[in-house]
Every structure is written in C-alpha cells, then in structure tokens.
Image (spheres, rainbow, N blue to C red):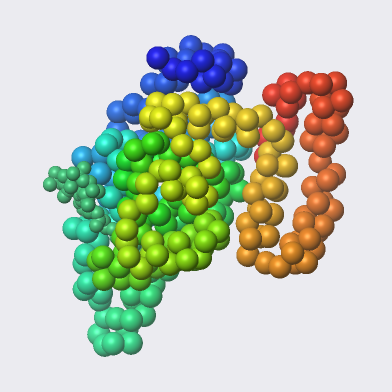
Length: 308
Ligand SMILES: CCC/C=C/C=C/C(=O)SCCNC(=O)CCNC(=O)[C@H](O)C(C)(C)COP(=O)(O)OP(=O)(O)OC[C@H]1O[C@@H](n2cnc3c(N)ncnc32)[C@H](O)[C@@H]1OP(=O)(O)O
C-alpha cells in the first residue's frame, strides 16, 4: 500500500486513481521505442519518467545506452509538455555501470593507422561518452534521480549530473573505475567534488573504490533523502517532481541554469550572469501570476502557466 502523502500527491497531480500511476511509475513492461535501454512514460502532467531498462544485465551501460541517453534528453529539452524529469531504474539494482562485454572493443581496441590516429579516435570516443551525462546537465528541466540497490561506476557519472538525488536504504555507491584500471573520465571526478563537501572523502572513494552506503551518502550530501524502500522512494520522487512541475517553468528552468552556472563560476560572475538572465526573464507574465496567487494565498498549482 502506498503511504498517504504519496496517494494524495498522486491524486493532486493527476486526478487519476493512484494505483494506475503506481503501475505507470514502477512496472513498465520494457524499453520504449525507439529505445532499447530506456523506458519513457508520463506518470503525471508535466512529469517525464525515464527508466533504465536492462534489468537482466543489471542496467549495464551498453553501446545503445550511450547514444540513447543523448537522444532522449535532447527530446526532453525541447518538449514543452515536460517540466521535470524523474529518473530511475528497473530491476534489482540501479546500474552495474559500463557494460564490460559490449564496450570493451571501443576502449581496448580503438581503431586507427598509427598512434596519433588511435589516440584521436579514442579521444573522440571519450568525449562522446561524456555527452551522455552532460546532456542531463544541459537539459533545463530539473532531473530527480531515484537510486535503489547498487549504483556502480558509470552510475556515479550519471547521478552526479542530476539535480536532486534520492535513494533507498539498501542503496550503495561505488566509484569503481580504478578497479578496472582507469581514471573515471565521463564526469565523476569533475562533478562529485562539487556535490560532496569533503574533498578527502571524494578522494578516498575515487582512489579506493570502496562502497558507500545510504546513510553515509546522506550524511555526506550525495543524496538529500533516504527512503525505506523503492515504492516509497518513487512516491517521494513523484511528489517532489509534482512540486517542481507546479511552479513557473520560466522560474524553474532559469533556476537550474543559474545554479549550474554559479557552481562553475565566481560569485561575481554568477551575479552578473543572473542579472543579464533576469533582465529578460523578469518580464514574464509568470511573475505577475505567481505574485497574485501568493497574495491570494493560493498554491502555485492553482496558476496556469504557458508552456515553455
Ligand atoms: C570511456 C568509458 C567511460 C565509462 C566508464 C565506466 C566505468 C565503470 O562503470 S566501472 C564499473 C564496471 N562495473 C562493474 O565492475 C560491476 C560488475 N558487476 C557486478 O559487480 C555485479 O553484477 C553487481 C554487484 C553489480 C550485481 O550483482 P548481481 O549478483 O545482482 O548480478 P550478476 O549475477 O553479477 O549479474 C547479472 C547479469 O548482469 C551481467 N552484468 C552485471 N554487470 C555487468 C557489467 N558491468 N557489464 C556487463 N554485464 C554485466 C552479468 O554478466 C549477468 O549476466 P548473465 O550472466 O548473462 O546473467
């Protein structure tokens, strides 16, 4: 049975029976065309659910995955019906990271006639894999990621590119790359230090590949909430996504873009950027609508915002 807050959230956002949505959120039958590794659904208005869907291989990231993610998030970026994304995984765990069978050729036997060409091709491969997760960050719609079970290697690259991280009590996280002889190269080493406050802890995790469990993930700031089980987590993720979707998309998307800009620049540069941003965006009708609703003590849900 779903917790009461989840049932009320589900009713609030859709008016549909909660059990229908539970099924839509958590038991997709397989990948959604044109994808072979992702299942895409719309569990509630303005919310897109992206689910990793290779459960029999523990959602290992095969060749198809690396390009499907780029296609998927480019579509979401321009989809005016989507205001927020919930990202989760089907099956026993979140992900086992890179598919060690399918990807070995690209990494271990790169093509090219000489060292320069082999190196150049390998560089192109790495930068294209980086885009698989950078698209999450470049997408202006906030992404709430919900992790259960293991989140290994490439999984850390993925979740550190998301905006809000949730996990279950049984979740564990592992920066596994040193164990397979490489320096992580698709985002973990760049983003994890910006997520976790302790540089020492980041270094420890990346250099030893030790597992970090849910409680430490919470206390270190990797995740913001821990749930007893996956069902509760998906309800919590959907409720949070609903809170975001209720608000002005101009405000929400501008907030994501400015938070990421501020992370990567000085305070002075960030203030300059947001001043220029808001010299346009403050002119949106959404400000007047939102202020009026606040004055009338109405919730943002009561306001109709134009699509963006
Ligand atoms: C330029 C490249 C940038 C990217 C770099 C990324 C690097 C990384 O991701 S490093 C991390 C690599 N991953 C691993 O080392 C994890 C390996 N897997 C495991 O340790 C376990 O599978 C796991 C603890 C995650 C789950 O254990 P469980 O007992 O639940 O499952 P298994 O019986 O082990 O596996 C079930 C089937 O899934 C296949 N599988 C699991 N992981 C992978 C993988 N990483 N690659 C390919 N296939 C994987 C496993 O072979 C089983 O398949 P089958 O035998 O056909 O049933």
